[in-house]
Image (cartoon, rainbow, N blue to C red):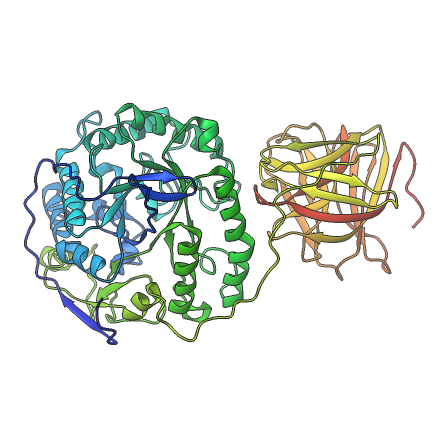
Length: 623
């Protein structure tokens, strides 16, 4: 281990690597397989993977060059090609690959105590752009070299298709912002499968490959929290799995989570699969959740512990493919220490983002994304205007002096004091009790609901309502629905005493629908767990839902939904207030009832409802 000095300077003197056409397989490192919910060697020894992502090597991300005015790899290549031609562009990218990550990086990663690297690459590195049906010998030679350097330093490698054909999300990690053309494209599906077939065949005997991370961050469109690509993703992942196995390759294969997790996949046993695990990325306080220490504590208790139990049910290993606290005010290195230790306790593999990046200011910064950065200030060229010599010098990293964040290394080894005393939060419900329904009511789960909801009508008139489902919004819904047929005009109201939910967009309320299909037209007057109320409505099948929201004095809240000649009116009141109208919608209701969505496919939202009244074909009750 390196001495814990404040700054450790590493001068990297690069020698261009000789590109071998193929690396010979080795038996020096034991093959990795899935052992229930753990990774293990073929000898049966469980292994705890702790590592780092080699970002910006085989796929460029402009922000990692401190180029915040450029959106993505596509733009970088487009600018360079337009200004200097394809030949010079390719020479520059080749030099970047020769000097960004070298033997010295692998040696240092091993020396600081890590045992694996996650290797992101863009699909165009492996596909001959002139002959899409052919794989690129030059691209595979780079993977060969990376595997060889990792093996020489006793590091396992997780191969990560970071940018898939067409783009798997609308952000930089697809290689082109705004491009998520993997979805709905048979051509791109086929090419993705062919890429993994070629990888599987070439590296089937390489024992230092820990796993294949087959699609990075499959999130679909920008801010698409409803994950409309789940079913398509599951089908594509299963197809890739069988294609890899058809090549005689037994490496562990990882299916990726969407923005709402991994809870929609079948278990390996149900698939008849082996050496199959799952992966997801966690950045609480940065891309979701609260940016303070208790926000991390809540995330651990409400998200990670239930996920561990779910993975035990699936009997499948898990990779935290990317994570980083970054922000000093939400814990920084000491919070990273908590995560490293927690993931190790869970038996999860973990690879933080990222190994190195460039900063204009140079030197260490208290809130950072890296383990290694340039030691001194650096001029960042403007790719639109700088001359070739300036840009070429920037992309040649051979003489760059790097500084290691030894505080982050100390976090990896649990050496930081004092330790946090994290607040405890209740573990979310993940199962619902058996339903107890009155004769006039029915119950169903609409849309995707992996943990069925339930309802219990108690003798004192209370309804205990347990809801699952991904959300009630967008173009389709996922919810638990306790319902009966709507007959003409009606008035339906109930008091929502409390709502126990861990997700901010979990909902519970009174709903009318035109059918039980997920995309049906509907109106829902509902509460959020913070005590606010809203009217969500979809005026026609498959249309985008809209919402009107109001703040209240909190629980208990009485909700009303009524229909008068097709006009559905939603209202609410606190115990001592008058009714407040939220809005109305023109809707011919076929069903009415209680609706709840946990906004999480492995969690159950719980509502206590009292004093409910339903009057059909009659006027509204007295206020």
